Length: 140
Image (cartoon, rainbow, N blue to C red; front, side, top):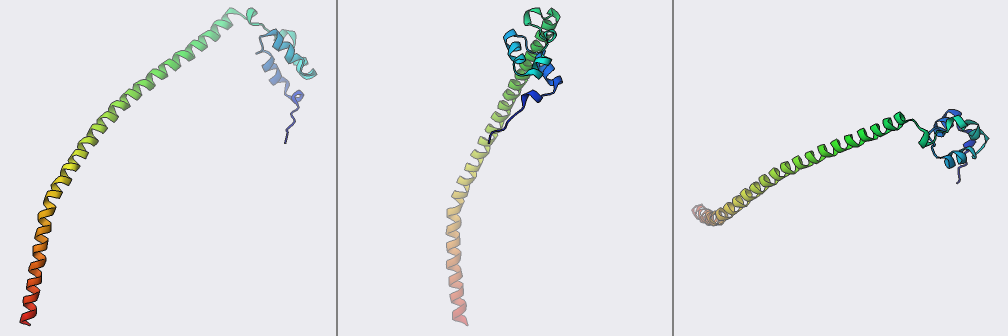
């Protein structure tokens, strides 16, 4: 389904804001050529080519761009610093996890060495219980 947009019905204030931001003569003429309502807004006084813009306007825009770039650089530096800090934290956690893993392996080995004697004792207890049960049965 195709949606039809009536571009000629855009608000004059909006069109005016658009027109003052066009600094290329060809683009400004194309803007004026869209329709009569756009042509009415795109008057000669609204067109300010880049070459005739005031130096202070250009300096102000350049300053804003430089400040933006500087803030991005600072944020990037902060981000890299944070990443490096997280690497150190992760490294510490990794070392601790390896230590715990090693301790667990030692505990497993120790448990395995105790399991065999305990199984033997368990078997002896079962044998002893069987003998006791047999003796109790014989006495009864």
